[in-house]
Amino acid sequence: MQIDPADLGAERIYRLMTGIVVPRPIAWVTSLSRSGVLNLAPFSAFTFVSQKPPMLAISVGRKGADYKDTAHNILDTEEYVIHIADTPLMNAVHDSSVEHPPEVSEVAELGLETHPSERIKVPRLTAAPVAMECRFRQCLEFGEARSRLIVGEVVMFHLRDGLVNNGKVETEALDPIARIGGPRYARLGEIVTLHAVFQTPKSTD
Image (cartoon, rainbow, N blue to C red; front, side):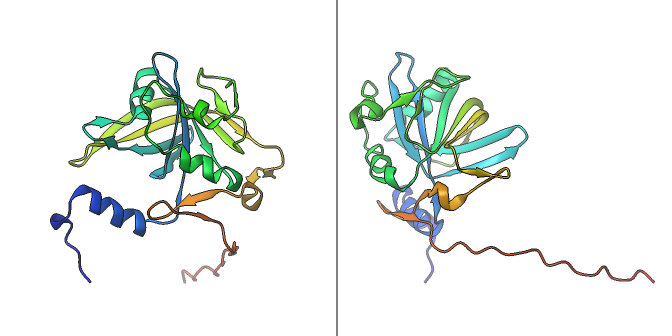
């Protein structure tokens, strides 16, 4: 089967690509509007782009002719929090994807508890096992859809007690959820650990 993307509209390409690029981690983002409304939304086009300083990137699309509230809020205030949700929060993550007017707080609608952040004004979600306070650093637009790739620097990590062992996150304890195609999510299956194979250097004689 061959598919020419030139024959497809943006929505059909989106459906195709989100079924191919799987599983995807989910950035669950809180941000504040200029008027102080706490917004919450999930984004599965998400990765890290730098380790020193730690920087994360999310791709934020548009709803119709305008960008989603998260993009407006981040560019306006330059602060936000990226959370990693675990399995008990799966329904809340899904429900937070519902579009609401800018004056409606998804956090309030879902009855989620928040906690003050340390370095920024945007609150973080108490129930999330990981929260990363971020400051905006760069925004790039791509394609005809002009999706915005928003890059921010992590200025504070919050991790639930027991998640870190010898400097590494215990993935099974984190129990993160991932996004696949459509309104479908996935949990981790079997975790396979591979060890590096060391080869004897070839002789230079």
